[in-house]
Image (cartoon, rainbow, N blue to C red; front, side):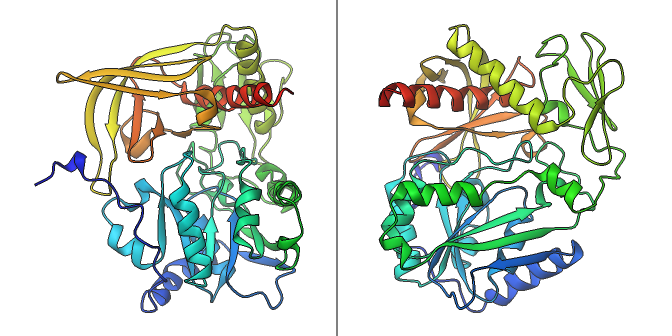
Length: 416
């Protein structure tokens, strides 16, 4: 009998049509959820459109899946779902049309699955190309291959841009807030246009339709974040003080964000802004502060000083049975990418990811309530969850570094 770690998730099994008897169940789960949040769906250029089509969805929070189900009602869909979503419920997810994906990997099998979903199942194929929940309430990096994928499939392309989902449960604080939801579902490429547009033109339309800023939506919708604990966890995203430059001393409590090194205190206001209570505000917007941190990481890369190193616990997820603790390793992230090396009971473990192999990485804060943040790095047959042991509040910086290294190396490769 095979050891649990030797059993790999079957990525090749064809995506199933959504079981007819489970479709009402998905509606019974989705609609009370979105009704409670007073969801309004605005449809644009959708009249008469029926499956198959590609549905590209923004990604904010767990409620996204209910919003997606409501937005395409009554049509069935195949959903691209990360492997950790299959843990303990693989059979059910396959029956409701789930397609497994290991994040930020170049997966040719997935392309075949999407084609099967569209042309054999005749379903909507729902894809969340940002591949993780929004960190700061703004659009994440999208893969350049997205336009090529859409062009290859030769079906209409639709974008579902959701609003309020992130604000209702941001990834850095999973306690639910009372926020009304809206969504725009827009056909951005018709069946006729997909045959004539270049993939560059398709990408341009995708990027335009994918633009969002949750804090701008908060103001435009006239809502407020009234919860007194609204800033708790925000230091995980805004980890670098813009006053003293320290990366290790941000904390958060209640509605305040504090640097324990220089004493700067920011209030996260009910309208979503930031205001400094101790001196002049360096930033009044969470997304602006977030992008400032990205620029600081980019500067370290360009001047050759960027380097991260720490011991990490390594968990493996080869299949839907659950996580396997492998042991301790050393993680190094430098200008040449990710390097993970360890000795697990005499078995040498090595994982290398050069900058061009991953345009971004998936990060988690206090993953599964274990008390530690983590990053995960995937191969085509396994996903490794890495928990820094000594360094604290570093995963946001690691994701910036991965994205900026990719951009720099990609531009060098293209000679730009």
